[in-house]
Length: 184
View (spheres, rainbow, N blue to C red):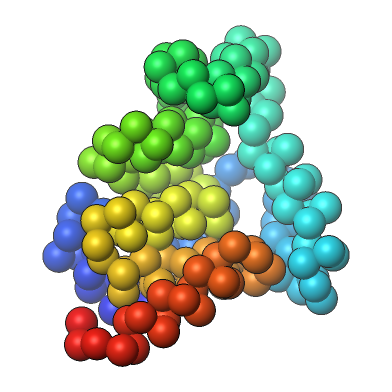
């Protein structure tokens, strides 16, 4: 973890805050995160993860939630311009709503705007340091930039929060094998 912090310090555009205090305000999240960490297997973790995502994607503001829904539909249909427009509005209307920034980070990653995606991940993590999805996204950005060691570190930070992230476990094993095989 210290290596990741040091790397982030030297690569300011990939800086993020490692998981620490509480982020989003819903009082149910603390208990859900405790249950997520304690889950015995991926099947036990899945409904807890779904509940966390449901809380994360609901702002409580009807206009923001409508824009999130529009953005999510556009994103799932591959309409990145429309999704980006919706998530831009979400972040303007609700700058303290972490999932708006996270979804915008996702779209920016998908269109190849890594600098903006990193900035959006930073905002997400400043609002919700336990955001395992944003940490996983940061790992994907690091991979796209050829920074495999930092990708492993970011994936491991996500796994500290959500130990049963199936894809990340597999990806970390593959990355670790590659990283160990050469000097970095």
